[in-house]
Length: 396
Image (cartoon, rainbow, N blue to C red):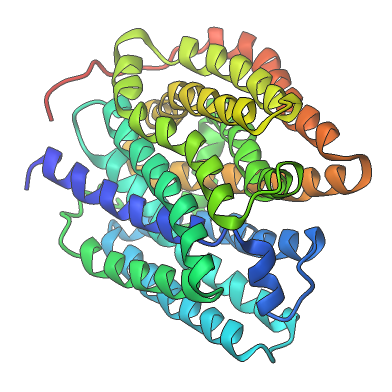
């Protein structure tokens, strides 16, 4: 099977996983109420945080297992099937309405532990393909952006029909992922007899990975910020319903999706530094501008701008991981990137939610955008001194 066909299939897997995840965001306050908690900021925050805490804990384990075994597709299929079952269990909890919220959070954590296998390892399989790391990560990026772009408005509309419906839709999507994964050729390199412990500690030999990890952390932090604080801010500041809130989120994710592939290919030609640094600086400033926007129209324009700028930097950051990681450690390297990204998303939820609760929404926007700018400034000297072997774009 050709690289180009597998690239499309793997992008489809990434798309479906992200679509399932984002379906829940536009009406998360309604969902946690149906699941037995109060629909306030705190309950919504912990419901989202439970999944991403599991991402942090298990991404490295799945990545190391795939590197050691020399296989990726079985873990993707098992993780997707497990996530599908647990999404359905959460849907039943929402219908029943009698399950203690702590039990709900425990199941949500298990669902996250299973789902991260499908997400992280499908991205790793894209790293295994030829054709240019920027192109492959651009395909991952357009899948991520498309899934989130469609998931936000679609989830909002599903909430308007019935509150548990996004959970059942997420379950169906992950069952489809489990079936799709097994038809993709597994190109994982041979394990060479390495142990699980060796795979988990292999990243110590490549400390330069801390650079894309740092950018991945702060980029995903802003995504977590918008998933919780941005959603509630749009609902309260502009009196939007779940459907309208989903459209606001889609204003970011649509350009974020459509532009990642061409921007990723561009980074194969011009290198990673300019897209990452310039993109991060501008991104942080535009996030702050969204919080300062006086009307829903100007806020929407700001969301479009964040999507365009995010599409510039995201594939270059993921491609830098591919550039730096050894071929036999890609699963662990991409898992590490997803761990830092998940910690960032978690920080966006917890820090953004805490700051918004204590000091108001504007302060939360300043913290989120200011952190992006600060990371770009602090990491610039190391990034400029990095000798990363970028690939020229070739036909794959």
